[in-house]
Length: 273
Image (cartoon, rainbow, N blue to C red; front, side, top):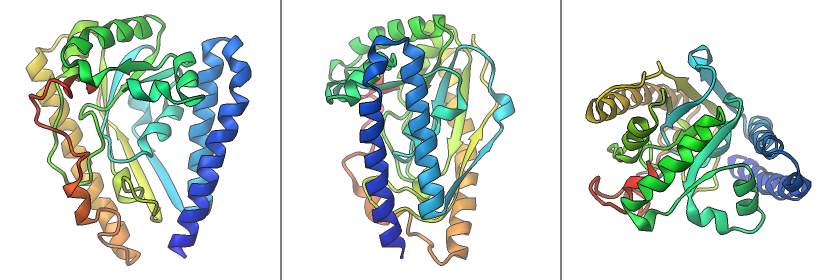
């Protein structure tokens, strides 16, 4: 039954993507906020499909901690789920994304219209200036910039590998930073089509005010996110265990993937923030 539900969900998930991309075509001649609203609707539709078909719910904790106006949002990244499920939390969000995504027909064009911030990871440290420029422009427009500080998805329990890009943006923009912890990788594992029932928990943590030393900021960010994430993962594992699905959402082979973050000092990864 889990396999059938997962197959049905994945088929409808991608159909929803295609339909919304086609429906978004008229938005190219409309204000940017219209395209952002369509992206947010994609997030809501996907969450609804996931709940109805796979019995995967979401619990957003600490929404009252979200400051009004422009800010940096540094979120744990365990799953593709994170790319759409954080959209409904914010008024006018944008993401720092890989430049290659901007080349995908329709999807890339919509990302450009929505004002996403592309990063050329092959440019190494030179890309930091480009994303800082894009971030300052987005913040001036009152937007919320969502960044995955490790630069790629990591399975639950993997050793954290925070890049310096987020610290660079924090220092260069002088913006408040909102940390987010989650346990999505237990229920929507990376590079696997299975979707496991349960409750994905997103915990919005206390904002980090601007003005801290770059190293102090990065240590605090990693400590806050990883401590909260560890607790959420433990809760999620207990839930899966109660359903007889222990260890299904975080199979050991995930830890041997080429997608795991590279060495912290690798300049090709640092701009990914």
